[in-house]
Image (cartoon, rainbow, N blue to C red; front, side, top):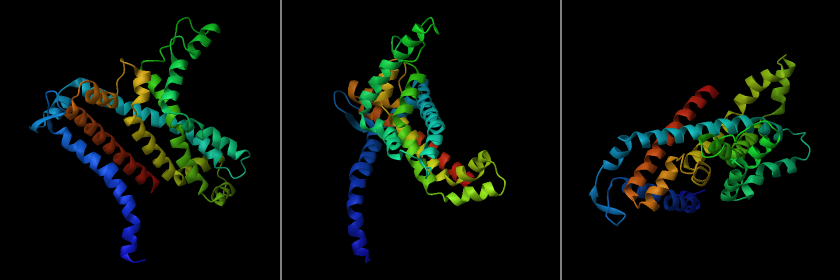
Length: 279
């Protein structure tokens, strides 16, 4: 295939990447260094005061760290829950495969706003969970499941669980079944086969799922806003508040850029560590 044909084939994807990824990021980067305006999105000139305001205020630093913690815990929770599910779905002798696929994908068929509101009904002080536990006599007062980090992690784990299961399942399906059979024939027990053979071979899917869930959890807005309320605010929620409620576009852009740098750095470190372990 000639270089011209290759260029023409790559051109649509390149245009989409530039229009919907490169240009918005460049716009956010430039906006983060603009002066705040009076009644307008931007003022005249450029400054680093927006970043100094973030780094000099422990409130925003703590909020960014808490956002990273929520993303990490959500990733770990989805990995612990999704790993055995993915291994079971990847079994070649699994019956009713289509039904189980549908169950895994069913959360994606419902809007994230509806799912988040559903969790408010479940986790509220007078919600289904607390009311049921009180009726059974297990608790005297409501458990604090809403308006805290725990509630946000629970809801985000449900929302992003399919994004962890599907990459791992795809990686496990690509493993030759004779590999585990050979390990068993050499005397390895099933836990050893999973730990020493299957998990290393499934590491590309695990890595992809963890990165995908972590990035989505960091940038999530609807679920933390509904479940966390005014008591727990993530950086993504503060970015929206700064840009829409208080009309501080440069400061909101600086917050978004700071979160992107923290998230991107964490992803690079994780990818390097898992790649070294995988090798």
